[in-house]
Image (cartoon, rainbow, N blue to C red):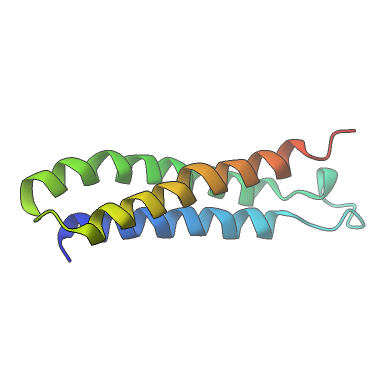
Amino acid sequence: MGIADFITLANGLLGTAAIMFIILAVETLQNPMFDDGVKSDYIWLAMGCIMLSVIGDIIDGPIARRYSKRKILGGTLDVMSDCISFCVAPALLMFVMFGRWG
């Protein structure tokens, strides 16, 4: 594994952390201390993790081309971490933030 693979792995872990923060943000509607049962601090942390994933995704490609050998592991890991960070986490975030309308 090269340095780009570790950056890609960190990208996927940030996406997973965003999903964890989104899950923590959902609170039962019986708790009157929060608006609509969503803790906004966890939502902001989830958005921050997604933004850090963007930075990691931007820098892992040039680093992989410069320092690493081209391996199947790096490409597969990149696709999976991008799917977690840029498909699952934002979709879950939009569902939690706007799914309670109506």
